[in-house]
Image (cartoon, rainbow over all chains, first blue to last red; front, side, top):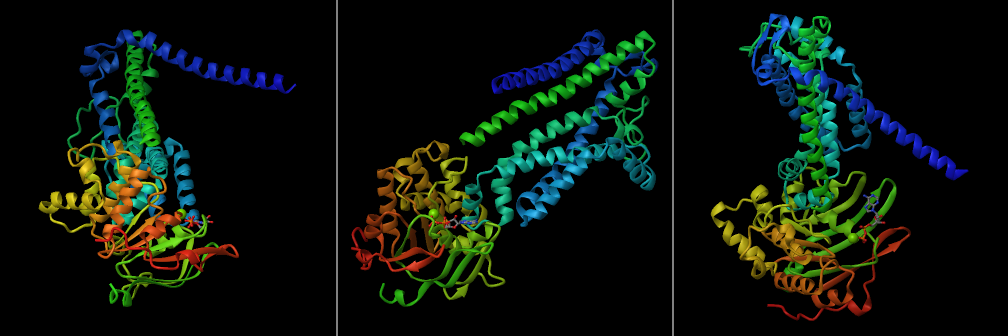
Length: 283
Length: 250
Ligand SMILES: Nc1ncnc2c1ncn2[C@@H]1O[C@H](COP(=O)(O)OP(=O)(O)O)[C@@H](O)[C@H]1O
Ligand SMILES: [Mg+2]
């Protein structure tokens, strides 16, 4: 009886895994099949023309890269600060737990609410209008939990003997942080950031009414009233207008580029993560 | 040496350590005179490591432990408000049972403490490296490959590198937590040789399981025993209650 149950369980799990992989493969396959023909060197290097029916997505790509770079610059120092607070400075277990809970809560906030928050604070209150900086800040805050948790995991898995050896030599907490903790956990920061950015690159809701427009922006020169184009918003707008077959191909093409960007970021993160784990176990 | 014994370097007075309400150490009194090797014996779990970690306040790094009583370093209470634990740890070095070398070169490892917390001018570093590695009986084995990764050394060599790293800070007191129990006999012998040569110029507190080692090295012994669940200073093994022969002293 037990054997039958075990066997059944194995089959069901296997089936679920297969289903998940199948859906993913189907999705990626469909996007590639319909989008790849649209992707060319010109598509990547030309400006948008004829309201998306012609031309390329150069400034959309540039805009998305600006947004996620800003998100990285915003989230990395914050993540380091929060992770050090959680792993080093907070002495009580209850305090640490509370901070972690807060991170998970932040992670659960719908991305649209980030957009709304940004709209009220930056667009209206600070009077920035639509700005790439708002988008970058919002995306940075949105991925903060991902980056921070990866860093926290890495810091907590640092061998205690390293910390004690450094402290035992008379290094102050700050010196231990700079000489041992940060150099040895930077891998966690990088993998966390890559995974976070992969998510940020595809988000539409936080930038929808705070940072991005459909056409007519290039590289921003300032902060106020300086929106950027972006890949996800481009898809968002064109998809509502995809009865035009010329536009349809462009949508799928843009999707391929976005998928490539996101997949690329995740793919760099994965081996890095494995390699760092290996170092931690054998170092 | 006789007059230095009158001025103790470390005095432990009625020291207790509690985890929550459970005592780990109870009512410890111990005096460490200058320039001696004091061996600390006792069964596993008696609190030897805990006591050692009190002496340079490394115990502060473990959350949840409460320290009562007093430890005085040259007459000054180290747990007093305003006492600087980092400066204390620079003067009271520690060597653990398992070597913890950093994933960097041999040279970087020796310089680790000096670079971050020391006040030695850069020009003196080469000399410092030679002195520290020499004192740790490792210089001859690594002098031609100071820039090789330290993790490639054998465990015994790594332990001596850790000793050199601590000695580079020029500490007055050296706390040694079973420093040879994880080592091959040759490295263990080299470490013992180093410790004997350090005696007199520095004060050493040596935790060891090895009675023969205590006999070979120690001028004085103290013994931790477990009574009612906590470590207390007990009577030393009568066999050991005599000055160890001063073999190898220079
Ligand atoms: N952080 C801690 N929290 C609770 N108990 C501890 C802690 N550290 C050590 N102990 C307990 O204190 C006792 C003494 O430990 P230790 O000082 O390592 O002994 P020894 O070095 O003599 O083997 C052990 O029973 C250990 O379980
Ligand atoms: Mg121990």
